[in-house]
Image (cartoon, rainbow, N blue to C red; front, side, top):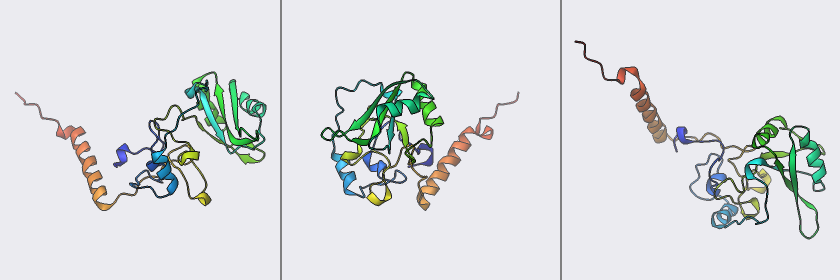
Length: 200
């Protein structure tokens, strides 16, 4: 992988193998959950109505957080259209994450910028884009994919705002190829490489 094509955040497609790699360069799964994610087939619920690009994912929430509390927090910055706190279907207890939909797409960007460091009960919440419908091949955490995670779990996932990929460490042959590519690009764009006009 060349540095010119390398990105810190996944923007088009979710690759479980890359998500399980700190620099997106792994060629084989390093934990069993990645194996599961590679073979998983995720189907979204048919009753989702929120617009994906207008919706933000919020996690690391208290299990007893309510829609009203979230709406109150984010309404201070942008107009909230709807809030969906995800709960256990049996107990009704929250799972620690929710989806917040705004009226305008640009409000998601605004919230992500202005509400960074937002806390609930003294604990910082994680804010990110809702990618389940906008990122091709998305696999949620319960199937071995997802984003983030904790070191203790041994299932860290990278490529998101919270845990972007790090710069890959290139081997000597890769460094040489990269230098050759950069040199070629420089020569192609250098004024000295342009054909000289004949003087009559």
